[in-house]
Image 1: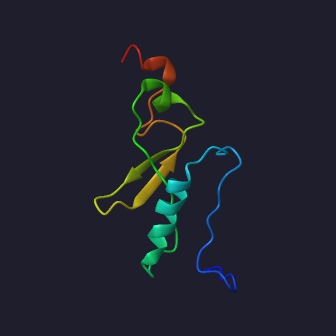
Image 2: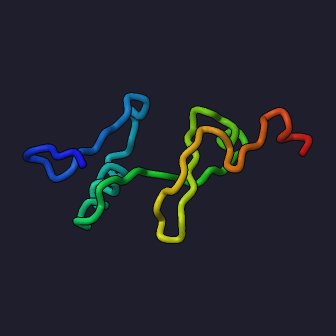
Length: 87
């Protein structure tokens, strides 16, 4: 595990998220109240087919505890974009 002297947690905001809501940062920071939490990320439901097939939008599988178990830029399970309308 990486140790950063003088910090309880580090929150990384990606450059492609310049309009992130400050409340989202607070929500993410609140995850670290639990001492066992080492990593946290924000997720949201996909609501449109365009979001689902957009490779610039990461997809995630979470388990019953709300823990991320798998990330992909493709659909999960994988569906080829050319087959999505016909399938």
